[in-house]
Length: 273
Image: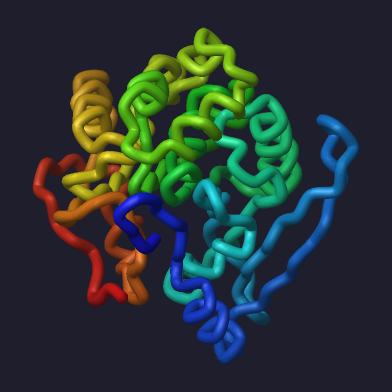
């Protein structure tokens, strides 16, 4: 995500990662369409998987506010280094915690996780918020199958974001996702649904320490709440405003943090552009 004085625009180095993906014979990718059970519209999903190998892990990836399923290319490293399948949802735009998004997510997760014992949720920005929300809002059988949640520059407390985010579009699209229903927004906030998380569910967070879009201080409170409920939590952080422009973010180190508990802020990245 690149930042500007008056507006923040999502930019995840998609071109760089797509180019690297195309050149990599060890990864297979499919852009597919499915019919949403919610409203019968056709929606998109990107599936990345090891070429010629049986996948050992399953990740569901959720994109940022102005992204789509194509943003899944940024986590291609999970496929190569962890022998994993990545299923990236798209199609709803800035859906945040909308009823349509939640219904689509349940449909896609249920469909792609039928033959595995468990799966991981991972998301960037709005997608990180969605991953945290889904861990508490999915039906119980799907919640019990979540092995871990990885949230990258997420928001955790939605009402404060609507009230204080430095980005007008963030405030407006978040409200619009629930048709302006502030009570529903609160009910679907990660901070509100965390009591429904599977006991012992591990989390890893990466956040920017001066994030004024999704409010770093609120995320830090959320992390403290999770630790108080005995969830293993590892946090990584870096100085700066809300952005995620890394070419060589170390996803393997992030995933290895699942199940541990650390207050040490390490930065799992090699460069930024």
